Image (cartoon, rainbow, N blue to C red; front, side, top):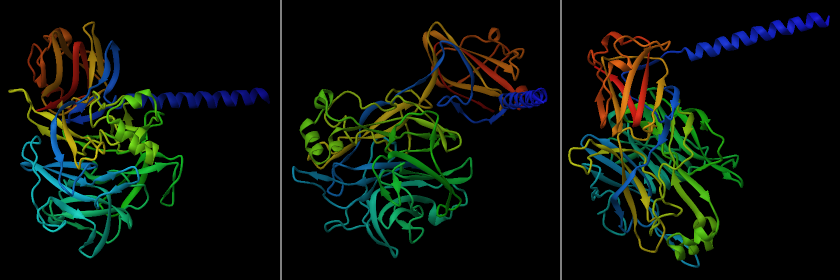
Length: 522
């Protein structure tokens, strides 16, 4: 009897092992259809293997000048939660106007929260138009677009944030070409707003459309043109939220949902990560990357309470830090910076543990609770270097709640296009082989950088790894330079039309080089 049982379990075990191995083999053989889309290395999705000294490297934006000084009476030292988008020939930006007056006796909001507006033709110089919509202390000469009160019959007690976007849904009606989430403290939740001109805003429903969450941070929504649905990402407390009451022990985290109309939200899920780090994310800043919209990028603000120590005492603005801490320890000793994360499905994110935006060299207005809250949205701006290609511009809060002056700043940062993460190798060399994929087009272009002595070589293989004749390493002259768009040529030219639609792999051999992205095109 025992012999028969042993044979039975042996057969079952062999069957399961064989089928599991088969399933893994099938998964490994899956051919990705990338068409003509641009592929980045913010995640390892396209990478089959790295060898030699090749590795993925996180890069960091460079600080530039202050883009906006929040110095108006309806603004103040805690302006934040900025959002921006391009709209034809201009960039539109929205942000919270707020000010905290701090004394030894109290911390007080000097005025209600306002949602303010600025615009720019180039993403570098910004203006605050006098919109004439709301009256504040008399005249209507201000740039306020939303404030608490009765808006089209809906009573809104505005919370501390709002996020505006241009709706890329081709079926969006003209009066809702622009949309927004506006946080409400009473009733509690996120109101859906719409606008025909990006200036005058109206609620889309008479009550909040999302009500389960914390919401006390920037909450965002947008049209996903790849998945053909609206996506929302908002703040909640993991393991610390119960019936709209935040309890001790919660972790600041992110929740997501989808919608077909921006009003009815379903498929609510907690965002997950490819790591087990216990990180508190104050914001999420998730959006599609405009040059590769199948990839979602987030630049969340990381929040850490560090308490008092010699290093904390050595940081800038100590008197004001101690003043804030006298009201609550975390107000003075919590620090914030910004991270980078990415996703292909909108739920599971790859997250870099290292900072994307470090606080930088210590100086007044930095290294505090409120620093490095990144504007939701990326602008493409001209380079400071004549003849250089455009760059990405990011915008980050600075000088937040650090003194009694009624101002705070928004600083601009820049980075090369697609420059978030590269596959890098030193002079001694390294290689990357991609997963098998099909493409559409007849040319291959790469975004890369080398030294004078460095190089990038490209080989095209079939799905099994065999070199395709005419596209071997021996058929290409080493590529060198630093550009966002270089068409690759082999001895027989650059035409890849014969390979379009067929399964291939790319092999990149790097020497003192960074490879940021690649794409096929006609």
